[in-house]
Amino acid sequence: MDQNEQKEKNFKRYIGLETEYAIRFSSEHSERPDNRILYDLIIKIIPSYVRIAEGTSILKWKQIFTENGSAFCYESLPHHLESGLLEAATPECESPLEVLLYQKAIDRLLKKCLEKLNSPYKNSYPKSTISLIKNCKDAFDNIYGAQENYSGYIAKGIYFFLYRSFLVFYLPLLAFYILVVFLVSFLILFIQSILLIFVYFFYIIFISLNQKQKNKYQYEVFVFPAHKTFFYYFEKISGNLLTFTEIILSLPMIAPYVIILKYLTFRDYKKHLLPFLITRIIYTGSGSINKDGKYYLSEKAIFTKRIARTTNFPADRCIYDPGNLMKLAYLSVLSFFKLEFHYLKQLFSKIQRFQIGMSDSCMSEVSELLKVGPIYILMNMIDEGFLKNSPKISSPIQILKYINEYPNYKKTAIKIKNHTNIDLPQNVSAIDIQYWYLNQVKDYLKQRKVIQPEFIMIIQLWEDVLNSLKEEPEKLFGKIDWITKRILMNQAILKEKRMNLNHNNNNILDVEQINLEDYQKYYELLKIIDIKYHDIYEGYYSELEKANLTKHFFSEEEIENAIKNPPQSSSLAKIRSTIIRKMNQSYDNIKISWNYVRIGNGAVSKIIDLKDYKKKKN
Image (cartoon, rainbow, N blue to C red; front, top):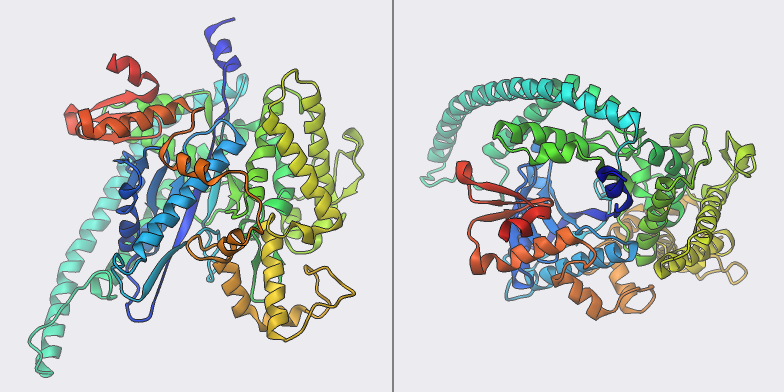
């Protein structure tokens, strides 16, 4: 057995979750601050609970890592800098339960920060409340939310050879093109700066004359970010122009790489997991309502346009998102200009992050565990060659949209093209497809000599949820987010109408006294419930937790321990944690990344791979 075969045999799959939290600010008196200000207020409190270190990423604004291996940053678009999100990422974990624990630890740490920030003695904005919304869609239909990352084989055999060969020819062209885009962008900024000087000069004269006429001799031209003044709008226009320019100019070079990523990478995972991912929204969806009164199982699925990303446009929502690999290629070129090759080494690795973009931010631990648990086992099955055949669905995106609209998930509207080969009827429901995958996993585990107890628990939970969805979905209140949220909405409508549930119909999901017009009439009330459900500071799901109406997998002690300590299964997270804890004792000027540590600045800085860190220290 050669060295590469040995590495494949010892391959350990890591899971990581990325979650974007919308920053909410409500006040009786204060004008809403810029979200960057609010992010700073929250992040500055984190060191009072855990040790932190500054991150190295040039693509993440004010990134920090905590001593348990997690990361936080401010995520925004260049033309919406003031309305960004707080993004948190779990450390690398080796099991579904472990990654769920560390997601809970992140939620708990942020809630502690909010409690401290909103206390009367700490609040920077009197009679104001700052909170974080863990969802994927706001009241204006802006989409953000969660992503899942699973380490896996980017390609094998001839496909891996073709992928690497493409990179050898592509990266030099990308480097040249980045220089061109940089020069054009710099020229645009230069022209904007000249324009700013002239416009600002006349702006000051106008303000001066205007205030002189009003006998006011003191004026304030620019108060950022509370007042939307001249600079605010100039920043918005500049950001829009630069974003548009960079997207259009980079499209010719991004397009070939996107095509290669689509057809050469993660082929087996994409092929076998597509029907599973389309139908799993029946238990992973967080629920959403629109102005037409229609109710949807998944927030992300509403805006999903295609199976895999085809452009670098932010609105190009997809199921499989190779955006992480596109960023990695970009960083490889930028670091190469500085004679640093760690990103380049990472880009050519056979093990990469398989990223799923169509993922809802789940409040329920059951939904969150079933989001990562089954897919983790299925990827193991694919790598081992057990899952050789899987359902082939006609028009998958169209089917996704159909399933997502309540109550279509029970209808046998999915046509299976290869039904004779996989022991399925030609027309099935979303639940039927999930049962098929469940049975495949059961057969796989029967053949294994050693079965992790965690897998048995996940399979049993998966089956119990499917059985309830088929027979009595209302019993999943407090366990599945979209069901819990819809029941809360129905109860609110009944209260507004001053009506009680008909005793002849105990199904609170489909109340006889409520029709589509009611959902439309009470839309504003229902939208408040829709969003308030996800508030991690004082939301409705938190109230259900306090009332013991939800299911928990961890004790308070386990969550508190996970806030400060890294997952024991992850060597990278443990090394990262060790460095952060020792920084104040023996190290100076260190920045942390997911895979390496940077010591020093500029030309004298040193890059050390975390895997080699102990060797370097010794």
